[in-house]
Length: 196
Ligand SMILES: Cc1cc2nc3c(=O)[nH]c(=O)nc-3n(C[C@H](O)[C@H](O)[C@H](O)COP(=O)(O)O)c2cc1C
Image 1 (cartoon, rainbow, N blue to C red):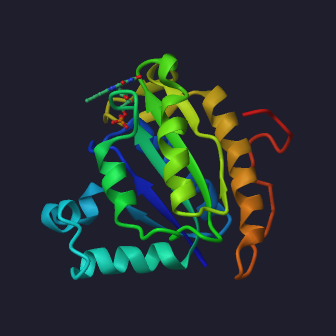
Image 2 (cartoon, rainbow, N blue to C red):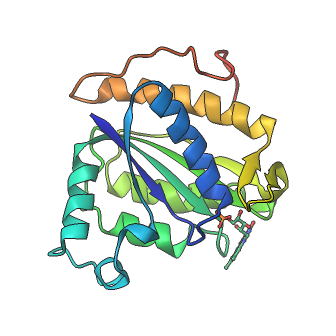
């Protein structure tokens, strides 16, 4: 059993990808296998023309079909999700997220657009028949610190919210027909109930 992560930012050094990568690191500590897809994973033609015959798209869809859940990250673009994330989601067939939990995370310049990503993603997850789609964990840009290497450090408040959301995401695996994940929460930041 594995998790698939979709990174929706076109940027290599990315705030929204940092949110997803934090979650992936926490899952790795629990020995969960993660397969990550971003714009870098595809030739542009295969991705933009949705070339279902290409090896890249076929292996992506096989990984999504076999996943227990998806972690999805996106920057807010024009009060919606990024085109990259939409392109990745558009490749997944209708009903392709049955029996899967989804945990979306997003970063944006303005907290005013906190709900924009929820509004954009929920209809997509319904169309794909996701078993459980958690609310987006949103971080404004002000909650990141840029390091000398151009990487992004995430503020404590957001880390706490990510920890809570991850526990809820793992709860969703119990709906998966394969082996449920161990619910060892020793790596959870809070281990306590906290509203997200
Ligand atoms: C083309 C473009 C459109 C954007 N539109 C919005 C927007 O509508 N609302 C907002 O809050 N931030 C907007 N932003 C800011 C980004 O969402 C924000 O900087 C985000 O954290 C970038 O994520 P990344 O580092 O993962 O690429 C936009 C940025 C770009 C480049």
